[in-house]
Image (cartoon, rainbow, N blue to C red; front, side, top):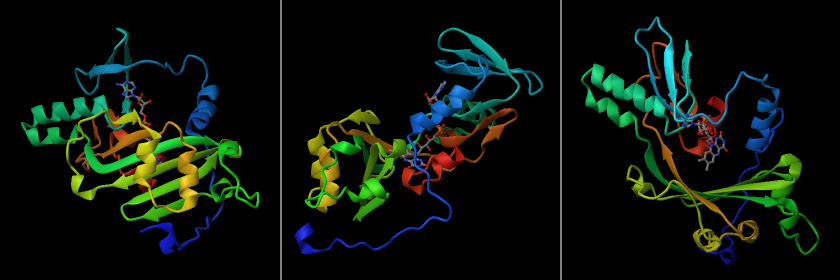
Length: 250
Ligand SMILES: Cc1cc2nc3c(=O)[nH]c(=O)nc-3n(C[C@H](O)[C@H](O)[C@H](O)COP(=O)(O)OP(=O)(O)OC[C@H]3O[C@@H](n4cnc5c(N)ncnc54)[C@H](O)[C@@H]3O)c2cc1C
C-alpha cells in the first residue's frame, strides 16, 4: 500500500459542541501550581510507604528523603506504577489470604508502542502554494491498520504535538522487558510509518529526537479504596491513551 495507490481518504470531520481547548500539559499544571498558596503543597517528595494502626488513627507517610508526615485521607494519584496501589493490594492479598489480588499491582503491556514529539510550528515546511500544514489549524488524526497518528497545536499555536500509535495486538499481555519510555532514532519512527501520506511524513521528519513509549494499562481493579486510602487517576484506571478518558478522570 502506498500513497500512489490512492487509498488515503478523509472519512470524518469532527465537530465539537462548545470548543475543544488544546494546551501543553506542563503549562496547564504550572497554572495550578502558581496559584497554590505557599506551604500547602510540597514538591519533590517520593512516598516510600504508608502505615496506619487503626482506621480511626492518622495515616503515617514515609518519604525517600527520610522525612515523614501524617494525613487523615491518603489519595494515591501516583500514576500507573502507583506504589500506594502496590501496598494496598499487597496488604489485601495478605489479609484475605488471596494471592490473586497481587496481579493488580503490575500494569500489563498492551502491545502498543507510541512515539511522541513536539515540533515548533515554524519548523513545519509550508506547501508549494505557501499554505501551512493542515494540523496547524485543525487537530488531525491519520488512521491506518493497527496504527494511527494524532497531531494538534498547543501552546497557543506555537507548537505541534504529535503522538503516533502502533499496535501489535498479539503482543497484548506480554512482558515488556525494556525501559517503558526512551529516546529513539528518527529512522525507527519513519520506518514505522513508511508509505503513509506525505502530510504524515512531513510531520514525522520534523521530529528529530522522538521518544518511544511502551503503552501499559491496568486490569480492572476490584476495589479502589480501603478505609481512608483511596486511589485516583492512572493509579486506578489506566486505559489506552487514545480512549482519551484518562486525564479527564485524573
Ligand atoms: C503516550 C501517551 C499519550 C497520552 N495522551 C493522552 C490524551 O491525549 N488524552 C488523555 O486524556 N490522556 C492521555 N494520556 C494519559 C494521561 O497522560 C494519563 O491518564 C494522566 O497523565 C494520568 O494522570 P495521573 O495524575 O493519574 O498520573 P501521572 O500523570 O502518571 O502522574 C503521577 C504523578 O505521581 C508521581 N509519583 C509517582 N510515584 C510517586 C511516589 N512514590 N511518591 C510521590 N510521587 C509519585 C509522579 O512523579 C507523577 O508526577 C496519554 C498517555 C500516554 C502514555
